[in-house]
Image (tube, rainbow, N blue to C red; front, side, top):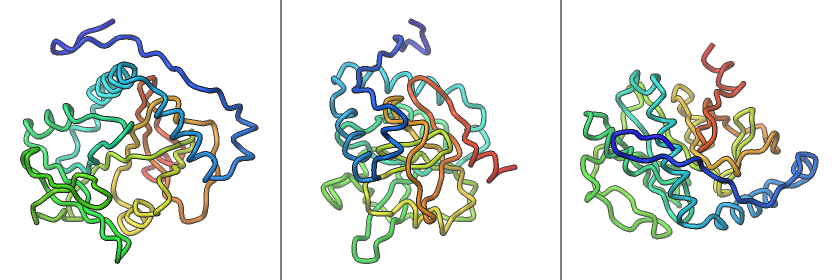
Length: 219
């Protein structure tokens, strides 16, 4: 165990059903989505809390975060990675945090700034969404903390099937994309379509990965 500012970080344990790489390569995105969701949901509340602490510890070690003043965030639901305490640290350090609002009719995301975690209300699919109207400015140098169900070493991502983030990143290629995931969500290789938008980094409870796609996009 190690400590950071009073927090204790235990060595995180992984409990999951092992899927061999050759099995994953034969699965469809829908099948991988289902398997990954089940593995993530199977984590106990205690194990998930430990892994969240490990992910936040890894984030604090990244000096690249100091190069950004604007961050696109996501509000965790269900068994998703939860770094709300880290978001609060960013706020206290003067960073601008933006959270998504989903427009199902236009099939797009917009990001709204929050200055306090009281500025949320139940939104699309009962996901907390910001109540303000301070919209993210694409001219700002921005890093995105991005959710998902499965990722691979090359940075490919399988989300929830709506394509919202793929469309958003297609329109805003300059954003640094940092996926947050538990190690059990990461495979050596997953199926990728031409329109899929890869991640630059994948931060898990076990590792910090800079992807091959990230090297290519930012060389």
